Length: 433
Image (cartoon, rainbow, N blue to C red; front, side, top):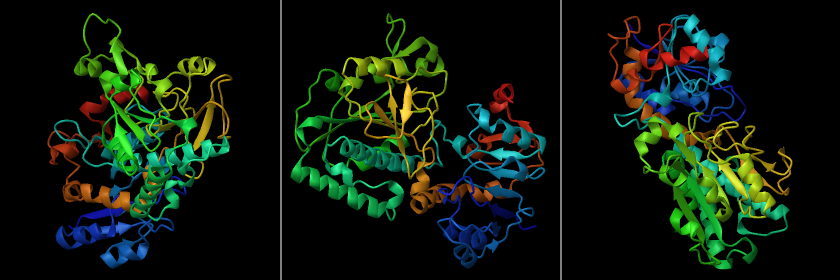
């Protein structure tokens, strides 16, 4: 029997134009792996229906004949079919409350759920991800916010020419324009009343690397967190300072009789507290690129921002909160934003937010689906990473018990639900259901 793969139409919002499998790879699956592909039609997907048809796929609303359905974002709970296998970003592994009804329905319908987020190597590094593009888009939207914010405050800088990510014609166009702004900074400099311009990166993974890739199109000099604390910064008119913070820079043991130990921090985060607020008076922009859940100390609290604000020590103009944990690691992140309105301002004196970027306080860039602003580029890279695993996912016999299920280790460990039951690594989610 020919295996049938389904590609679901993305419909979470009007910005979601990505696809998990591009037409070029559909053609390879049909011709080389003899897998039939059915693709739901979409008026907004970055790769049009006819491109899939030319690749040999069938365009059809009905995916009921597909044994495995691939998507990018969450699937509405009323669309799950009995005992079918689904592959998508489920956003359930932190026990996210808003997705527990969906997870309950997956279990009730005896489905199998494979989550891209948990496809990792032996060192727990993710293999299939959009993170680099989240960093790229997050950096651009943050620089856009910085330029708009300063302009509305009466400060003219080259950053006022930065566009929102989705307004560029792909990654090549984006990089070309940011590089031109870099040339403008080298030529005309940065005005005195915003110097030194310091951009910090919390984290150093794929998201952070994507954001730094964009920043390095500008004239940049890297400094250490220790240099930042000691104020070892020259007031160069044509230089942007970059500082990357690792775990040992951001937290310290509550009991300081023992040194920082990374594995201990991962295993026992309750033994640690944040020390990040010490850097805040020196930062112009912070890019938050770290994984966070409520076991870990917050990176920045409202009280810390309020104290600096009241002492007139708050230089921080924008936080690019790419992680977007509501009321989480960045306590001021109280809502998600959209690509056309990526930021709002948190006012620490009254503990409120406003869309007026000229307002005193800290702007928060909190777009929660940043890679969709570069849908074609991000889909190509994602599909390229996913392609080697697709034949095994589609051809597996999911009627077997979990223990006897034959799949690559990377995929098997990403199965959150198998035939309606939480798998051993994810039984902890039962307490959230």
